[in-house]
Image (cartoon, rainbow, N blue to C red; front, side, top):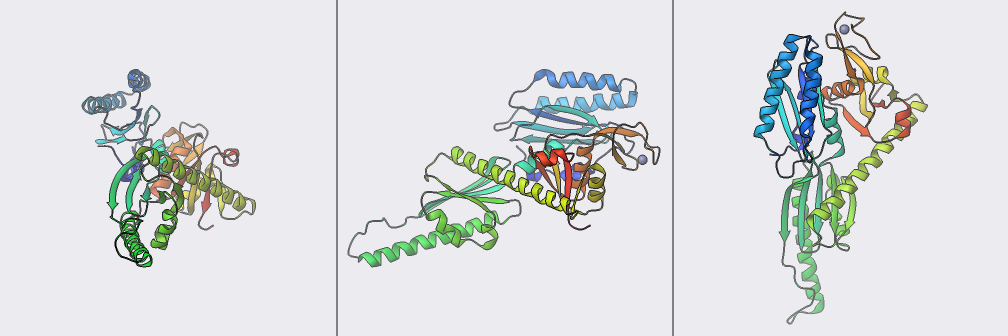
Length: 371
Ligand SMILES: [Zn+2]
């Protein structure tokens, strides 16, 4: 079964690490749309040559890779699957595999904890949204999760034909017809409330021909109305996949606009030395103190640094030993580590794409709740 991103326990993944600071966890990401047969072999041999001098580490790596390979052999690509993420460690008796409906870049990393940044980024990019397609007598409701339709419901009602028949007066006919439409809208709205009130439906898109989608909003609660990002003009019979793609695009654009607003707000706060921090050290401290409202991370930025898994001290640059406790220092991507800290502290993370200001200020920063 494909995993819905919302169902992944990111907190659990972020909390796992090797207390002895050994690179005993393997994180494997595969783009399953076009499987590169040689990729895993190549990376395996590179890692093995690094572990050669450390027998127990090599043993753990080999055993972990055996488990991963046997999983791969037993789990051929499923319909709709575009990616795969596996986190495993033999010594820690740890194994998690997620079949994803979204593609990921091939990656095999051996580290002292699962490498979760690519997954966290997908979760930020593909928010679950609700989609309503309706005209005055038919409705379809969708919940789109991780870019795929996760749930749908159809509803239709025989609303009196637009042309009056029999002996009714025009006015009486119009009244009855309007009453029937009104009742139908109320029923659809009830379904929407029930389905989309759940926490994980973050945004709502309403689609359909003409003015029905506009009037329909009046039947919805304030709570749902607050989640609406756009109304899409479309025929009721537009192909499902076309409609879902259009809605997905709208949701992604909305997310991008919100990210840019967030960076603009962050910039303002920095200028007036208000509720904002930037740079590795200050951002890390703010995350650890639980002061962060939103962590802003440049999507493609990496910062080379080290972490002491013993005392968790994190800094940029290179070191073999922690200067504070003498523990072993492990080379890391500082941004990945801060993302992990943030997830452990239930902090919201925004992965921002190509924003020059954020890139200029080191690719990392945060808006604070308090100072
Ligand atoms: Zn230390």
